[in-house]
Image 1 (cartoon, rainbow, N blue to C red):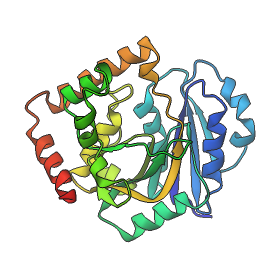
Image 2: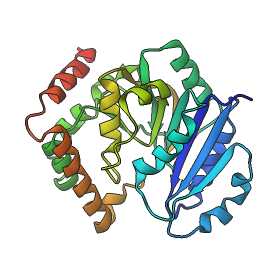
Image 3: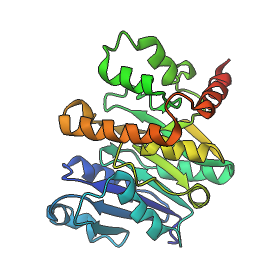
Image 4: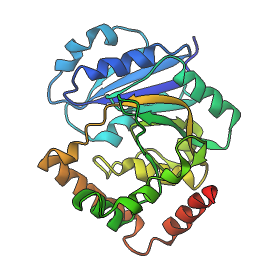
Length: 273
């Protein structure tokens, strides 16, 4: 079967949940090539996942170092450019039923102006994850991370576009990196993940760059499950990595003089008036 969709999962000492992600992808009734890009300190996962790695649809890549989220996915994307029309970036804690990849492929084939589409993302208990968002400001990210949730509740609802109801198709300039179905032609035009970001803001940055040239769309006709660990809320090391990379993001796009962000966010909210 001709490969038309490539996919990548970045591994780092991943637990058993990654098996559900891999199995979900390999159930797709479409030409698909899966890259497992391992940033772990040892090759232990190569043995653990041997049953999947021996599948001809799967290619395992060991990096000998933790190169970061975006850089690892870029390895797979670069390998896919010669043959794939679309590339799917997913987290190891994502899983879904049959038909999801096929439905997103069909949507992108019909809607040529869309460069990036994301399905509805659910917690395992079927509640909605609000992961289609406005472009955040420094205050948004600081308040969300360090202030009590009730202080930021109203602004957070706006930032997360909860006014949409998450039951309609809409454009959003920031779609979570947990599941990114990307048009390869869009990546060829705007570039891949910015590797200056080790992890966290690379999804904001890439969606934003695609949004300037193509539509970036939330498509709730299909859904996936995301276990969502929120690592920076549990580890001081991950909090430090998060903070450093957010600073790099605002150094790139502007701290308080990002007029483009204000214009994009206003247009996004205008869809729901």
